[in-house]
Image (tube, rainbow over all chains, first blue to last red; front, side, top):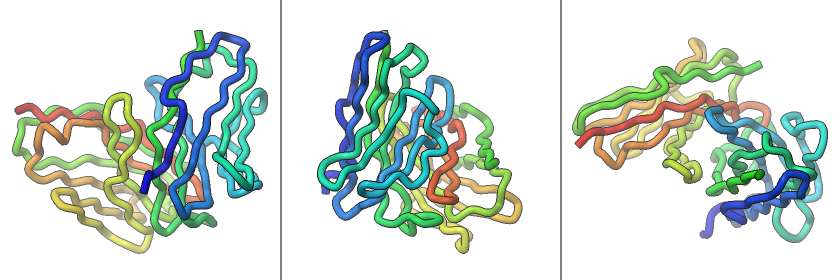
Length: 117
Length: 110
């Protein structure tokens, strides 16, 4: 049971480049969530996805950010034209159910730490 | 809008002490509440999950309580150890998302 796998663990991008963060949910989990942890702030919800569907993207910045969870392969969080303010830790979580809330809670990955230089 | 508060932001105790970490939230319409531990530069480890219909959960030296009507949860750590030093995060679940507090950074002195 490998848990929630995120890669890369650390990512450095120059301003204006694209960042792609990957997340493979726990085996048996079909619900994926992305959270962002800015320095000195708490974790903030970004987006909730099921296979091939975005369920809730109310926490996603309106521009440059997108997320997908294809039928095959990991979930991808994509940040285009990165700026210094995008530097943060990005965490992925998965659950076996969704709806109003998963019965068994959420399992988090180790995160990807993005640094924009 | 749900807001989760954890006070104080940091706490230092001597080894062996029993301690309580507090969490408060503004909207009692929650599905569950989950306590996590985060070590520096690491991910989140789930400690305890309390469903909205439950009052408490226990795991080893940890006990978490939930009073939904008053918007409060506590995490009790018995006989603290230096290995318990970490940031403890409280997260309230509703509508398929978690709202986190900023965490309490605990330091247990040998």
